[in-house]
Amino acid sequence: MTAAPSPALDTALAYHRAWTGHDFDRAMTYIADDIACEAPAGRLQGAQAFRGFMEPFTHILTDSHLIAAFGDETTALLMYDTKTLPVESAPGAECLTVKDGTITHIRIVFDQAPFIAAQNASNGS
Image 1 (tube, rainbow, N blue to C red):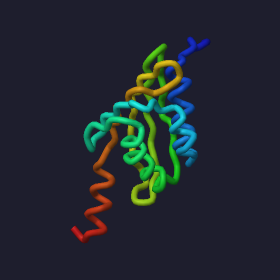
Image 2: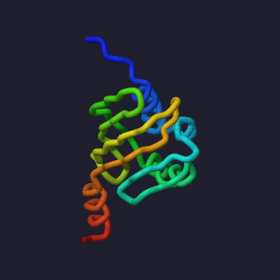
Image 3: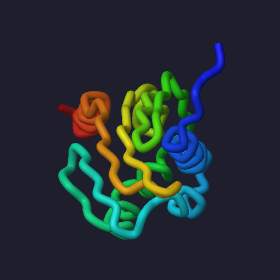
């Protein structure tokens, strides 16, 4: 079976490989200056706000496993599991909108429960 080309998926995967490979400067080359990001922490607007949100996560990331990836001309969906310093498994997903090879919008969904449990354990709760 031959998959149809997906410009959005190509960009999303290149971005994902960069940030999970600890090359956040390269990851940012795929991000539009006026990106809008919807994340569990709220809405972020602009590349600098996005960098401030996402880059610290890459510092605690120790491994990532891509579970599934789909895309078309303008939209890509990635589902992955991450291993971080505080937790062994933190699954997440991103729906990315891409225009001319640049990510203009990301909606990030991730399971916060492992991080909350790790924080409670470190606080003795």
